[in-house]
Length: 483
Image: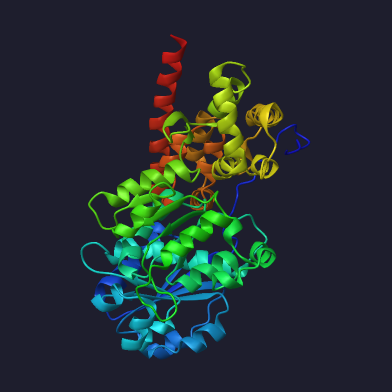
């Protein structure tokens, strides 16, 4: 647990998942829609310097001051020297935004054989004028590039990774804006498009026969994966449309049963896994909204769900106070207490408590409870004590802004009305406001502030407006409880 400082307070330390930040985006594209969208990018990610360049030599010789993403379209990427770019920029990701229908729906190898320039890109996305509009997908493209840089760097930070396995850039372009709107700055996304890529990432091996448990645990990334979203059919070896998803799902269930799985596929073969994964008919109307709800419920990012043996929602807990009350109920000797103890034991083994705590900014408590194989009353006692200690710390864990300590929503509003824009901006960009509010138990308000894009006075006014709205809601709820 945290130790009080000299003032008797506990420091609030926000979790930063991407220590390496992309500071520049270089856009080189013949498509007007892409160039126009690039100029609007500053509204969503104002801390990034946007360079819209017009000739391949300048792009190829560009030297960034730090991490950088290059965004090109089909007409521009063939003329860029990506070897020189990577030599000059160690922390660079090259992305392709393609309007080519074949590239949008093809696995990597066929696309590279027909259009060799696609091999130059680290990430491939689709764009059009309807479902994958450049203005919508630009921010997710930059974010995916930043995630890739940080994952490659293998920095010594506790990671939470959503692994997405799908070979079609078009679906990725439709899905990633939804996914990033949910996870904000709480997790990374890793995109793989073949069986070998997914296996190497998870198990540090490209085939099942070569999996070595010790190497897998030390070099693979499965320990950091909190969600797997996969198709059934994607390339394996020389097969562009193999059912490799079957084996991938089986291996994840075998070695890492704690990882929730979503199968994004309309294939009949997906039905085989109905009892082991959430089935999502990819492309159906409303499917992405359905997926959003499932991710919030089972990744630890939304409410804490308590499911009975039949998989039915028995309790939906909003904050750490609700979880603590459930643990108290699990101490009882009646039927409900015994059933809750069984559920708590199962959740502890699957890291459900620690994952939820991490996602809601209780990283120190999450570290203490991960993993826990204690059982019965000993487990309940451990959870009881640690949750109680954490709750007692909340009133003495202020958010500090410009040397001012904030303990409540009114305190936060007062500071937001007077603090300089340059102080507010980085706190919003790095999810600090929502993280602190989440930790204090204001999960609904935190969710609305995550992500909150913008800059300058407009950002400040938006933050104040949202917080004032929720302040009234919380006051009404407290008044209703008193009555």
